[in-house]
Image (cartoon, rainbow, N blue to C red):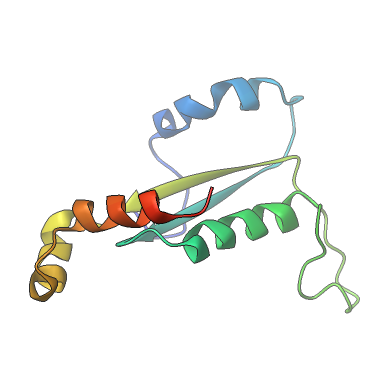
Length: 113
């Protein structure tokens, strides 16, 4: 809900079950919550999540790695991505003459592989 509080509906983690089941009891799992229009989805959207995960699981040093604050990496990291509703986006894109899905699909298809 964006409050930063506890997650009330744990069923949202069902898709992560195999990865979470492989962890030992007591493992620390970071949860990246990402919400936006993603219209279009960009390399920056994806890269920000990749970089955040790399830091959180200890594969890259955090930005404050030079100070005396110890960083303890998480054992795993999952990401929850929620796109804003098209009803919110439609007025934003009306001037371009494209709907959100069409624009995102065009961008994804043109992305380097």
